[in-house]
Image 1: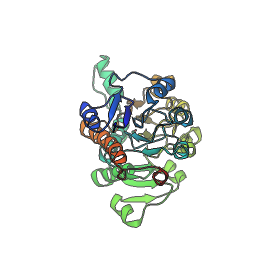
Image 2: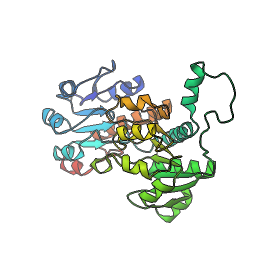
Image 3: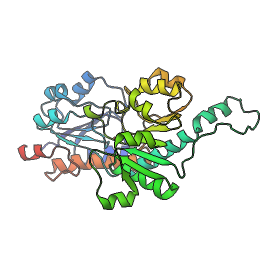
Image 4: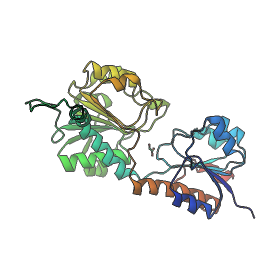
Length: 328
Ligand code: GLV
């Protein structure tokens, strides 16, 4: 019996390709070529499974052109690159890669909060540019982390990891807002208090966004929300581009509506809004929150394991639309 055909849409670890090759007939984009949608369709035609990353959009057009496709396994916890309704309608299983990246991503969220509050990149650029000639009493004065109020919008696993780091490590007062409130035991573990979005924006010294992207969370933070924040506050986005209105944020940073921002994700990335590149009070990183070798390896392994389980007729580990399994 011939093996299922799998497409790996972006370059990944060679050991993952080796593992997949033990089970499947694998075509991989190991050259990491940038594929247009038409290229993706071309390569995906005739494939039974796909190993995707957050940048590979699977929608009704792709699905219609690739009727042999049965499963797409995302090497990301976020899956807004998947049109889940269209995949369910086409009987295509979707899986993501949760849990294995939680602590690494929470570490990075905290790193970005600290870099933003303490003006790490801005001061490093100044030093590298040879502008540091003498000590001065208020040079790159930032805002404190310890004892301050940390506001977390989106309190899933990563949000909880950030809350614990803030509350237990830095003695921060943690407030959060989420679609649903955590149960009392989890709130106690995270030392976090549930508040309205408005109270969070008005009272937090550091706001961090960790909510999933959807039509409902598009521009959760725009000009009106930024205006509610303290002028001394910082904003960090490690969630998804589009949750923040980047143009409005650049304007708010320029006009000192808030003190500073740290962004790992952008609207239309890898392009970055040109106005953000012009303001000094923003720390910019290229979507690397989960990027440590062990964690990226674990994410890739989980995506591969979902494909292997599925084609072996076993339950996939992290399905997003398990209902399609009953129909396949
Ligand atoms: C990264 O952004 C992910 O969703 O895993």
